[in-house]
Image (cartoon, rainbow, N blue to C red; front, side, top):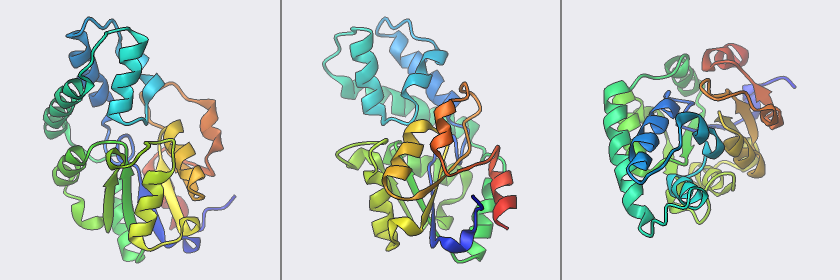
Length: 220
């Protein structure tokens, strides 16, 4: 299938692992915070929950390791605070991101952001990368009834952009994100996050590229 950008009115980006190399930072934050509760999880274990909202990630591991923690919101706050510190100290856009955003803007495409990360982390990423002005609308799945792989976060962004879902192109890096975009009836580009083992199920995506720079070459 050839990727022709003229078929789309909007491009909607995931954030973690797409705009910023934040997946390694999430692993550091979770390992740091979870260890205080007696967790024996290592960074490699967190591949199981990539693409989920942080509240869903915490609940999964709380049950999986039998921490017996009732106040999961307290754990979430600690992780978000740690992530704010890590992002501020390590913020760099991934290869091709800036050129792609500039190109899409010059092509008069609407640009959206749909992420499982919290609104607080959206704000710090956009600020530290200096890319907030590119986005017509950004949205966190924290305000949705369900996070990815449910399509609601993508459908909300499409609605706010006033673009029909079938005219939206999604850029994702995780299986949960790819499923979310497809369930929203959007076409999905997959640029796999590099610190995880390749997941053969990512073949579900409509288009595949090694980096954002390769994606940009394809659509020019």
